[in-house]
Length: 462
Image (cartoon, rainbow, N blue to C red; front, top):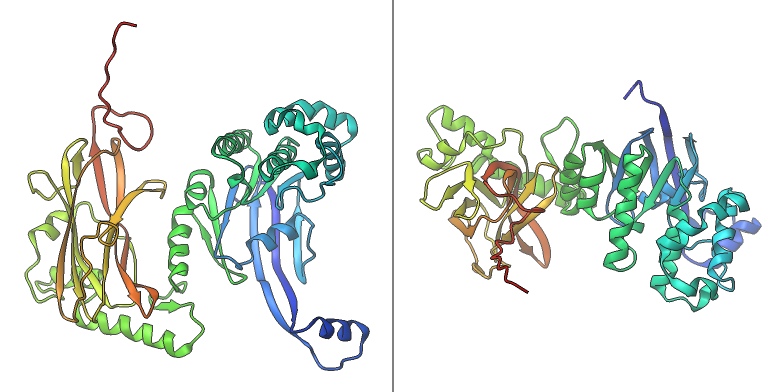
């Protein structure tokens, strides 16, 4: 990327908010009546660096309160940073809080001109874009009525239409593509694709991970104001899922680190992982043991594991608290043969072998299919299927088999596995393996999309 032109440069960006217990404390400090600090400091952004190149589409993901919206508002000039620098090259159109700046007493036409001028366009430039804005909003004669009479759907349609038809060099989007009904959302995504094809620079915040995978060239992961990493959408989405369950790997270290605040809980979680590795070994350790003629499970390597080696991902992502270990996983075809290729339209089975090192009240076994872009296509688990609702004791092992018909289109897919559950009401990950297996779906008839509807067609004379 060194030879590319920089569109947005964020350097050592920090945003600190003062949180007061009472409004009177804020007033006393403002008037200089208090010598003691009456506020707590909250870092919405903590020394964040980020570079967006011209023509790139970059997604920002993270949990609520991670600083995603804050960084967009600073880039667009809505907020001022506490420290750090932001450099922007190019005209920005931002879809942050839709409708901000609208006058509720004015009609739709007046607000189009008002917002256009606020962005920096002349009346003549706005008039040239007026028909495109009205066509996109598609609210009919309501555009001549005061905005205060609009439904919420009509309001966001008009606001989005104004923002999206300004023809910017840089488009900044904050969850705005999920507004309106399903037809309007489809129109918004179509416009988004047009922007990408035109080589516009796009900075995109969304909780819709499929959209991040589909549209973004890179992704940035934020958590509690800290940049945890950046990379391919697939890698960052996998890391984000670890954040959601309170775990992520520190850069350059194999240890599991919890995002919980309690040091004792962190140490306990770390000990669980270490104990599990001693008792049953991680999948990586078991592979080493097998190559030496031993296994962490004190049993001979299964025929399934040996056959499965050709389609297993050597760089799979794994984590968990060590309460269980997925020690074997493979796919068989309708004849029961271990395989890495399944013919579309036939039955196949997904298998897991799980060993428990701790008691589990009601473990949930799951698998998920992703495409090569990292978009989750389908999957299920034993809780959804109401197939297993029993408790398991430490030292027990379970074999799980999911049987289904292959309806995916021909192509390459990745299967992920998981064992989770609930402990004291909290969702707990015992062991997860992301992108563990590669499965090829063989097909001589591919239809539209991810799934084949398996239609029966009848044509008759009218």
